[in-house]
Length: 273
Image (cartoon, rainbow, N blue to C red; front, side, top):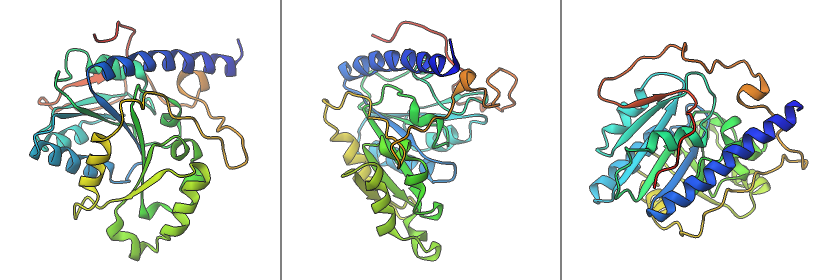
């Protein structure tokens, strides 16, 4: 089997598991939100504000946050008062459906209405992996450049919603919002774009309402967008592509005793019922 065939087999196995996980969680009334962004976009701070607002309103939400190492984000998000779990990937550059399923087993509160999955900070590999989400949201800070959607068409092209973050820095950063919106719509025509600022709270309520109003019928994997010239992204993932990331148990990380965590790619197990 050639590398391309092997990679497709890996993705097909992930997609099958993701579909079953999505159906299982939909039956329980859980909206799953997959948050994609590059490092430094401000998605952890924004997510913390959204979780805190939901807790204030008595809406049962939870969050699963992923990083290669450290539990810093889980500690930050737990300050919201919402249930939070950390998943350590030990060097893997993206989450996979099996990891999400196994981390949720026996943990997710039964009355959860929305589960936010903060993916690894990376706009490449995570975009190709369905996690069983109801909604996929791509975030980008105003400091990152208006052409980012064109550079990462799969991430932005597969999103149900695009969120502009750190809008308080738009003027000093020289951010051209019109150009950004035009570029987003080149890879994802008609997608809604939301402005936000975690510091001021702008966009927090709008983002929460968007998630809470997501129709139950949105139970499909968003289409993976081709590049600007109609070509796929063509990059490799995990052990198939040999991209040089360490996936084993030897990656260094620290643990906060108050935060539960999981390590590495999960092993197969029956989905939650």
